[in-house]
Image 1 (cartoon, helix red, strand yellow):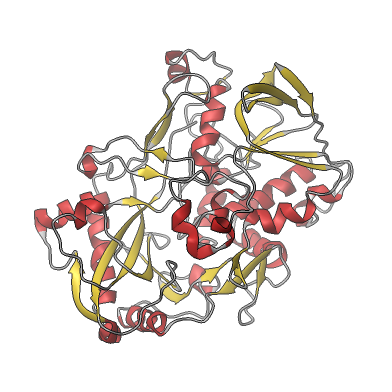
Image 2: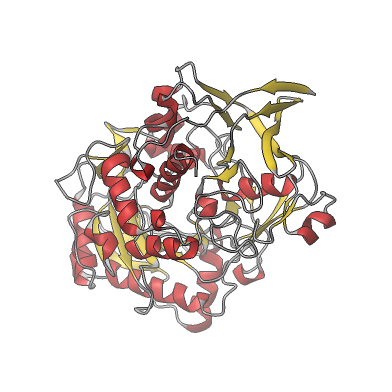
Length: 512
């Protein structure tokens, strides 16, 4: 086994608490190694955002598949995740949705740390994260790292969708990430990370401009197998590079940012997880944390489809609109959202036996369910497949919420404002009772917003990391990705993941 020694130093001085904005890499005392399992982002499939469907199932995708679910009529759904520099931000649709005020207040309550509260996160977005190019808004930042713009050149269909959503009771807002994310419901032109027609991923925004620095090293094609623990301290990682095993040692900290599927995998392969499960697969227990791999949360996705008129539809496979609402007014934040696009958003099972119209458009609905899933190992080592149970419809109230979300989407799609683009509703149409239930069970898929499997919290029996992202019971080991979310945020999870990264850098910088 080849051993490589790489130092990652803390900064040696405190710099203004969590208000410090300079990246860790700007100080020469911090030597940073980034290990990426996939390759670089040079592919046109990545840089051209309209080619995002081609990334699914490709070598840019981990190509996970969930377990068969009897509640989904025994379907096993594909469970894609990005495998390249930039992760999901290099293969996703590019929509920016930074999460609702109530989501961040919930995170702060769960962790007992005000750094996760809405006021803190809003300031972070305004001062450090967002480079917003739309109309001036005090809730939006102008000089941050991430290029954010309103969807470029909105199509007349997009304006018709917003008119329809407003007619259905969703207030219209100037943008999708200002006051809308403090409200019970709303619609707006979608925000995106596209600059002059090309994707501006998180990698391109943050790491790419700095990776030529002498204190920053980026290595691709490295599959992390486990964290090396000595005593109660993380001292490095063991990886597979090609056919060889390598050990990289860290002088300061190991930060896992592998996503909500691979982060719990690496933790469990390191002996960090539920003791009974680890013993069952033959892994010695380093730290008994039952929540590792539990609390898998996601947004389900399904489509409502209309037969189109002769009016021109958008050709890009990305939405220019975003609509948010609650399926239950007692909820603290919107749990449902919808994006619009041309073409049929329908599962193969629901398309079978139906004659699709020659031209269609869809509202693609996302929904935060109450049920939770889990990630489990089936053996030791990176070669062993994972058992992934997303937990869809596992809560008794989940199916009713899906039906309520579909009803609202249908109400939007059937408004007179969309009459010029519609001849008839195609699916689910006026299905009721058992037929509607079967349609929904056959139609649910993922929005690829996996999170929660290394959730943050105060109690080591129900969470994996504390409010500063440190793994409970261990030193020098943190997690900084969507797996730390106690629940899925309202809307897409890319922007909230950037918030996690920014906060992680600040926590490390102040040597908490």
